[in-house]
Length: 115
Image (tube, rainbow, N blue to C red; front, side):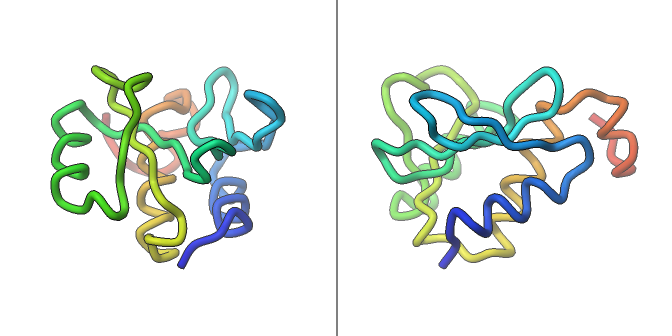
């Protein structure tokens, strides 16, 4: 079971990451210039970006107890993650992928992955 403290530790361990209050004071994690993760207070869930809307749809279909969305994110490659339903290792994979998709190439190049 993952917690907000796990999110904070994992997100801040990525190159160039910093925490900033966002959307009513909820914690978010960013690199200049974009957010890559944030906690939604109203849903108690982590918001992350995924590679495509198709990937989002696969996650939603595979485990609706873990992943969900709202109408606000329809048509966007963004998924909400119920923290109590995800383990720390999977949480790290989700946060790192979101960071990779949103961070500048000057930072992602340090991870040895190609976009």
